[in-house]
Length: 178
Image 1 (spheres, rainbow, N blue to C red):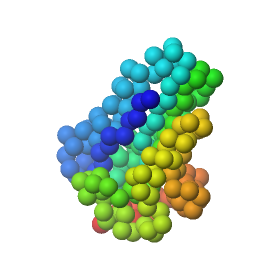
Image 2 (spheres, rainbow, N blue to C red):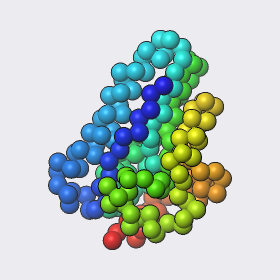
Image 3 (cartoon, one colour):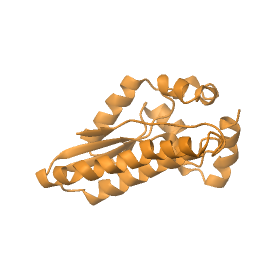
Image 4 (cartoon, rainbow, N blue to C red):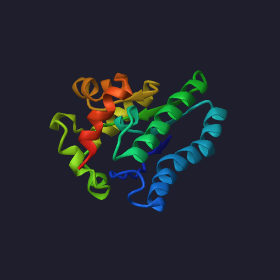
């Protein structure tokens, strides 16, 4: 089993933290995921078994002003996972994108995302332990993606996947902007 869970995020205007920091987000959140999948997926397919769990985010469902690079990177992880999931279907290998909402960890403090989490209903927060449990269950069931946290969180945050971007963009802008 391969679990890609490393991640970086920047929650300011795109480029405000400099070119190097924006590119570092892409190296960790996009390039590393693709690289590790390219390294380990062929062996899993050859053996006829295996699982890849890629940590995406509900941020990947919509454009996220003031978190543009992070949301774009997580969208890449989501759609790469779903596409490769379909490509390896029937080979005994599963690829699952995990799309949590806010998870109270050091990630938020380190990446200055606390102001975003404070604006969301507390019931949308899911423990790291619950994310892991839901991710493993989804991979075991062969699901292409999962929003951890149960029906209430899935309905609230997961439904954002179906809101047209022109409607979501102003809402996300207000939430993300300081």
